[in-house]
Length: 335
Image (spheres, rainbow, N blue to C red):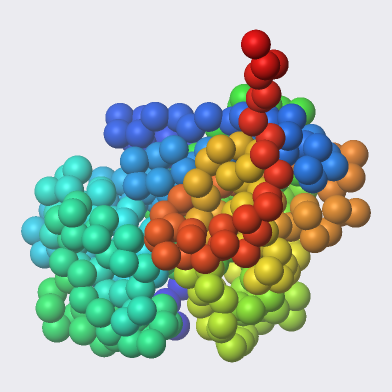
């Protein structure tokens, strides 16, 4: 079995220097309406303001920038439900590298169209992410493509860790950060930064109870596979992964599961209180606070809006469930 070297804090600092040439820092904002809704002080890290509307682009840029000359000539291939593929497609266009992305047959059409618009070749294969990933692992050697795993890639983790580094630099008084977990690269990056800076943060992972493979693997201390039925495609995996799990076991303070209904509600809360469009996986931090308020009471919490690539059909469905959502916009006095 291949062994993976966890990235170090120096790798994160190197990643920041390279990424800064291609991506701007994202805002960290506080919204009084969101504080009131959730009952604690909440700071939102707007990774949904990045070029592909997802934090993943940080890792894509760093990894593709470090490919060898032979790898750049041959191109790269990966499996994705969308945001990881978008990150590689954006970076591939930036560095002139061929990108092939294999997506599940029911992949979010908004993300698929965006990948193609960036120049990636998109193929549909398998019923879910893991089936697409297994297909890529079979075909990559024969096509001469460098396989990019969605989690077991130190350069991806170092790249996305720059998000947490920005948070702690801007607001060192934040004591808790909640990070959505699919493959776990974002949370693993947060753990690396926290440990390097003294371990004062509570890094809390959150996943859907309908796709708990990473959560259960962390709890049990071994990689396990679980049934997957979440509509939040950004965290829709039946499996957990070695490199990120090893990092999470040493650095994660807690790992919570949230309901599917709670995730849908969190999307509506994000829109109503911050006026930001967040995809279901990107709203997991809000869902965690709403469903487990006792864990975050009296805390100064950062939540990561990790992505905003929601399809119009999914958004319409979520909004239709609660047409009476509160309007928190400012009121004008009548003349």
